Amino acid sequence: MVTFVDTVTLHLRAGKGGNGCVSVHREKFKPLGGPDGGNGGDGGDIVLVADPQTGTLLSYHHSPHRSSGNGGFGMGDHRSGYAGETLELPVPVGTVVKSPSGEVLVDLVQPGQRYVVARGGQGGLGNAALATPKRKAPGFALLGTPGFEGDVVLELKTVADVALVGYPSAGKSSLIAALSAARPKIADYPFTTLHPNLGVVQAGDSRYTIADVPGLIEGASEGRGLGLEFLRHVERCSALLHVIDCATLEPGRDPLSDLDVILAELAAYQVPEGQVPLLERPQLVALNKIDVPEARELAEMVRPDIEARGFRVFDISTVSREGLRPLSFALGEIVDRHRAEQAVEVVPERVVIRPRGAERDFEIRVEGGSYGNVYRILGEKPVRWVQQTDFQNEEAVGYLADRLEKLGVEDELFRLGATAGSTVVIGPGDSIVFDWEPSISSAAELIGTPRGLDPRFDPNTRRTTSQRREQYHERMDAKAAARAELEAERRATKGVPAEDEE
Image 1 (spheres, rainbow, N blue to C red):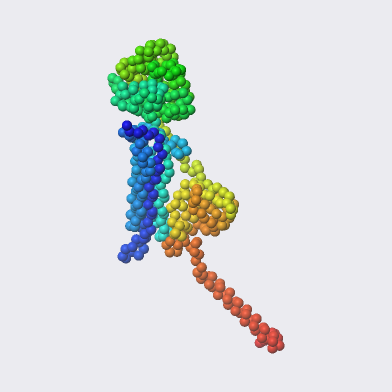
Image 2 (image 1 turned 60 degrees about the horizontal axis):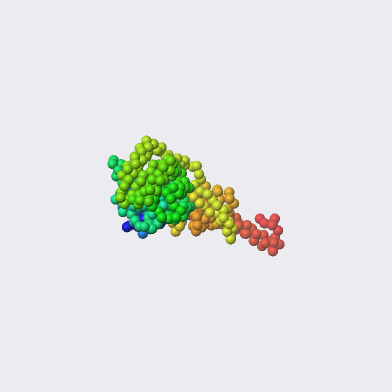
């Protein structure tokens, strides 16, 4: 029998975006062709698809590491890089996707439902896309950003119409084998069923699925036995069938006490918000193993008491198949009625409104360090901009400084008390560290230096015409003052008064 896996952790790495290209058009008789570097391609996404033909998460248990394709680099002549190949992962219908912390990301309950679980990186812009009327020939391009890399948890909750509940060895596996073509493991010891088994039952015009899940004991809602493993798969079922063992030889057990324990555990289990509590769903009771004479007598004895509680009771035997046909038709009626009620209910369309500008694009946290405060800049935009910057290119670094200044980062640093030379970190963890220099102003659009250079990092010391003229006059005035001083000293040594000078 194939191993059943209902919980698995996936290690995902979405594709990286391709880098943009730095290129200048070169053609005979066209010396000013302009930039023509293309954009990089986006990285491939990883998408989960609810597939009715997939029944287990076993393949992801054996191969939990999955990755999608990277985007191609941009090229000259305005040629963009290719987009990374998207990876689609089929999962069973009823799979719940969670973060490692337990937060529910999506519940894949509809066949064909899709969810992008890992977004690919963004391709970098080429220098052609970065050109402006004031920056006509950028000597840099943006790098591609990395895609999502992390873990998600897949948890399978069985999607069946009817769930068989009862004590271990009550005959649930035998019942599903008698009603359908399913062939679960059957033995005469408790907890034979270690994973859910699904079977399809045809009762007249009704066709529905039943689930045989691990046995239930007292304290299952608190984790005893396989209780939680069992109850998780009961959440989605529309009806419950209590399978009671009327031929048990265990001391202290009888059909009524078994039913009370099962009902108490079902009542104690908290279903997710929005779902019907387990005890409020349609329920039937099947008194099993009446092929044993003592069990038949016991079933006839307890039937009135169970019916008095409002349950429909069926005497069955999975060995002689007695009572199975009426039971299958009764379950079919409940399932058909539930499906008709669901068809009438109109599920309102969920509208998600995300207003722009409602939140700031960044935040700055002041952290203490051994050499003073550290100012950490967090936010989607600043982190992405750092990832797109080639720090070997001065012009690209200047472009990053301009973007941060326009976003308002510099004003916020001033407000928080940052000074020249303060340590600034962009992004969480061990990210890019800067020594903040507020004197670097926004002037990338006025760059007139060779491509790839930024005059703010290497100031131009060449004098202007006015500066040279001013320095020339200063030198001439200094020379005239020196000659006058020497002449006055010469006359003083000869005793010639200054007023006798012609």
